[in-house]
Image (cartoon, rainbow, N blue to C red):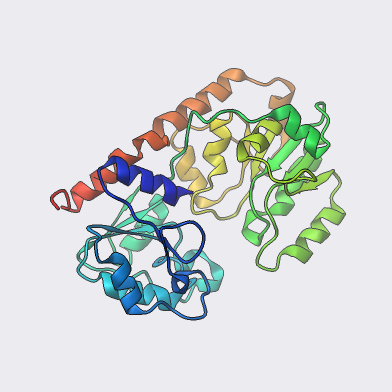
Length: 328
């Protein structure tokens, strides 16, 4: 999603954008750069795909080692070429990748992270980076609350806690369920279980002392906007997020957020968001009894001021200027 926003921002800056991916929707498909591809791309494939590019933006391929052979080929082709490496995740931020080295670097490249923690961690490894946090449509239309709740079998009197994440260990599903139990609420986990977490999720659901909803319900997929409209509380109890989009999305949609203590959360909170602690439901319970609309308006204004996607072209433009790439 963020990659699509970057494409639009680059077009606003006057670039003709060609997207390249291992699968899915892109102008050029190179299966060898897909996550966990069996065979890496040929060097000539990468060279041919990039032959007309004035600037190459690499989205996480050279960051998290999900396809190290492909990352190595791409990095080698990009030596000496104007390239912007956009890092969403870094190896040591995932337990299973802790032994992997830092991303490649080159004097011709500029690095961008989505948080200050990653920027500092790269700096400690000799790599200079700028920070461009994720951006959001702060004027997104509201979803259909009533129809969505009806499709999920949720009565209007029920308190509905939405956790709009996948089910993996660092998302702290147990805390989301516990929060819902304390609030006397229904818990709704939007995303699927991944990375072998299915059996753990089954046990958590079986032991829950509240109603639990999983996925999009019997009537099929719905929009994220519908999910936010349907809920009364957003839960993001994660122990680690590179950013944590629901932290800002909840503000855009005017919903109270119960958030965990993952390190980047403190960085986002410093902009002025007013949140609740995911592991202490008392304050949130009091707010639900007497909601404060001024509180919601405040969080929306913080999101609009600091995280609007309309500001993304200007922010990318500054990185390009600082890299000395203004002249092509």
